[in-house]
Amino acid sequence: MVNGMKNSISDAIISRISGSVVVATGIENAQMFDVVRIGELGLLGEIIRLEGNKSTIQVYEDTTGLRPGEKVINTKRPLSIQLGPGLLTSIYDGIQRPLNILREKSGDFISRGIFIPALDENKKWEFIPTKKNGDSVSQGEIIGEVQETPLIMHKIMVPFGVSGQLSDIKEGKYTVNENVAKVKTNSNIVDIGLSNWWMVRVPRPVLNKLPPVSPLLTGQRVLDTFFPVAKGGTAAIPGPFGSGKTVTQQQLAKWADSKVIVYIGCGERGNEMTEILTTFPQLEDPKSKRPLMERTILVANTSNMPVAAREASIYTGITMGEYYRDMGYDVALMADSTSRWAEALREISGRLEEMPGEEGYPAYLGRRLAEFYERGGKSVVVSPEQRVGSLTLVGAVSPPGGDFSEPVSQNTLRVTRVFWALDANLASRRHFPSINWLTSYSLYADDMFDWYKNNVSPDWIPLRQEALEILQRESELQEIVQLIGYDALPEPEKGILDTARSIREDYLQQSAYDEVDTYTSIKKQYLMLSTILEFGRMESDAIKKGVLSSKVGTLDARKLISKIKWTKEEEVEQLVNEIKINMAKQFDNLLVEVNS
Image (cartoon, rainbow, N blue to C red; front, side, top):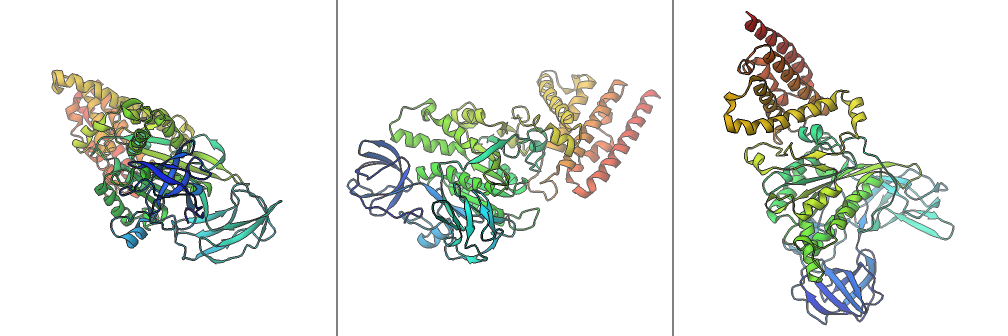
């Protein structure tokens, strides 16, 4: 049994093998994307091309030892995954096999052809109905709930395309394969269970998509202030090896104000993925103090695992994300990295002998990336009450040598609206998060103006723009400094460099490992930035009146500003008020000294 469907016997056999691509003849009633079982071991594969009676299959497992003449069995169903209680806290491979159970069954190395149910078929879940017998229900309507983890209530929904009268619904304990209700439609009776199946390459439908009007707050100052992503938005985070992609994504998973996190490790190195798989289950959700895994799903497919399963892992992860979005939750999906996924496409395309595009990638690379990111968004989901859920997509890109002009980076930038450019030079200077403020951008900031105005401050956007302009001006001045030296600069320009340094060191630098600095609320971010910029304006005014910038640098208020980031949230407002009072006094004293 594969994906809930019985095998059908046929006379299909393998005629050709090329790595992970197999050509078979004689598959009965073959259709595109049908899942098949190949050879004596029953390796899992998917039909990706049909020519007469020949079917080209990409195999999701290692094909070593496979030979022509072995049988091929068609399951007559596309690659599908099981959706239901038990997804959260799980760690899957690219085709939704639970890795912890795989290890118990086959040891440290996955045995080929092994099939394990995605969800625990023996565990009983407490089902609490929210509807009663005789109620009229329609597609997407919630008929009951299951407490999946202490953090997430799992909603049981009427399947798409089903509407009618509810019957046989009752409270009790059920397994994922048992029915909890029936719906009597005009033509038949449909069983509703705790779980259902969905084809991973088919987006789950929504009624309509909503504009991006509220930010996904991450607690990371450089992201929330300068380059925010909207709930339901799309972001790309390209960067070379060692620039901090994984740590940044872990911070997002930990602190982003999403209810559910899906983390896809797609084709990353085994040791790096091992670190994630061992550290993630140990992480604590900072808001609830519960394990972070209670609202997280991990999909792990390392670079030494079969290449075709790497290609499928992206679709497996996003389908699970859409499922929780349909319950009305805010979901954040991290894909690390889409470059490895694109490399899998390139390898499969090469074995299919397709015409290569730029750098050997298939010509349809841009379309596949666009289809993936298009599945994100803040949406009115299919339901009678028109529930709203969001699915935010953050895709890491690993360009060779940090070259952002390569095809995967460029095609990703065309379809995402936020660009977080990781910089190896910043990382080498120990500036983390190493996001380059000169090359990064967000196209959501203006769309969310009203949210910031109503929830933070009317002057939030002007403050953000002022800070970015100062950092841009610093970049221009640094080129002059390299030619003539800092001491030769006019005093006003020295003041700009002082303010820019304060923004960089006291605001943009943030420690992921410090208990206080690891997360900064949007309110604290506003207080920090407004204080730094107010000090900069006072310094500029004082310099115009004859005060030297070197004198300003000795003020106690400057030193206190650097302490704000290490100050607890509940104490920040008091400290900022003290700093502002001290600033006014100390600048007045400087002016008195100049005039005396």
